[in-house]
Every structure is written in C-alpha cells, then in structure tokens.
Amino acid sequence: MSNTKNTSESQGSQQSSQKSQSPQEPTEARSNSSNTSNAHNSTADHRLSPMEVLRQARAQLAELTGMTAESVSSFEQTEEGWSLEVEVLELERVPDTMSLMASYEVELDSQGELTGYRRVRRYERGRAEARRPGGR
Image (cartoon, rainbow, N blue to C red):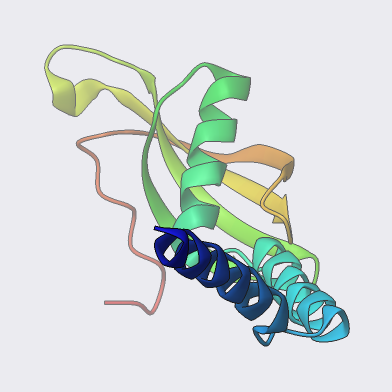
C-alpha cells in the first residue's frame, strides 16, 4: 500500500518538474513577435481596400445629405486620399425616368474619412448626356 502512495507522489513530482523544465519561448522573442504583429495590424488598418473606401464614401455622403447614393461613376486614388463621383437620387418622380439625379464629387482622406463634397451636375434620370463637339 505504501508503494502505491509513493508511486503516485513520485509521478506528481515528476510532472511538476517536467512543467518547470519544459522549453518556453523566451520573453524577448514573445514580445518581438507581438510587436511585429501589432506593427503589421496598424499598417493594415491605415490601408483601406477600394471596396471599403466606396462603402465609406457612400455611407458618409448619405448621412450628410440625407440622400441615397445609387452608384459610383468614377473612383481614383489621389495624393491626399481618394476622389469619387457618386450618383445620387435627389428628387423621386413618377415615372422614374423623370426623377432628378445628381453627380457629387466626393473627397476622402487616406483613412476613408470624408473631407469634402460638391454637386457637379444635376440631370433627369432618363436623359442621356449631350454629345461633346467632335465626340461620337
């Protein structure tokens, strides 16, 4: 009976000594790997995908103007951030082809925050753009 007790006690002491002797990642290596991943995440946070930029631009313009953005007709990255042209339904009419639409030029900074917008054109939904001289 004492053998059984000694065996279980010795197993317990062996397990605790194995835990203390198990190789652990050095503290310095752990902090370096977490710093690397944090640096990578902060870089990724500042770089928005084009789809994220589009979603943010549409949502922010709708919040400011109270009008729903229907589409984005142009999109480009600039030195300051992003420039978009967004088509908005300004006045709904029946029939739908008579509804008034507007194009808004929207500027965003590199983090996707709206920095400015302005209406550049207003038109009826059913009207095609006039042809430019010399254009086809």
